Image (tube, rainbow, N blue to C red):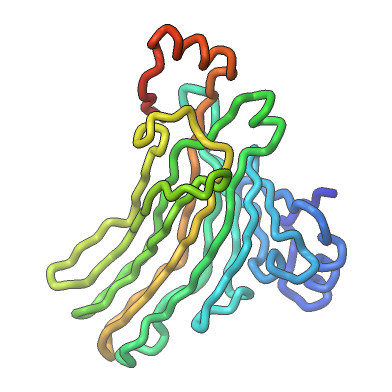
Length: 251
């Protein structure tokens, strides 16, 4: 059962309807289409969203500062393709995020845990593999000691192996330190032919250190690029010939 989530609303009757009809289902959204995070996390939902050739499972969301109802998940599919003819695929978390009580000494924080996997047909028949993790956001912080940041940890879901960390931030300083995008190509780092699935733990924090300061964002983007790996027989042949090398992605 697949639902187009373009018109999913936040009203209670709509929420109840979706909670009933989405039980044990994968919700499908396209580029620019959206669904409220509270709907995904409802008790009767499988918390799965299909975007292009990827399935995202939103396993948990925790925050004492932001309600799940205030977060929208928006599908992202890149307009262009890489040398393998594959799009970058991911999602945006959108909302009015920030530290609403400047100067109280406490950061406003939310944590999202999810998995991303290549859909079975693409993985088994198309040999599509995930390689890159891309992180970006539009956070801005002002006032001495203030910051807005996103930190995430990535694991190989199939082996529970730690792969790496990414961070994007705007730190007011002084001096100011800003990096609003980050990316890691794990195929290059580990010399592999890609992965079936990742597990991601994403932590988002905002601190306006003093009254009159500010820290906010409206969008956090996560996207993944991928390759078409050689079939298993071809990999064995290349290995025996000593022809396997590291691969670098170019969009």
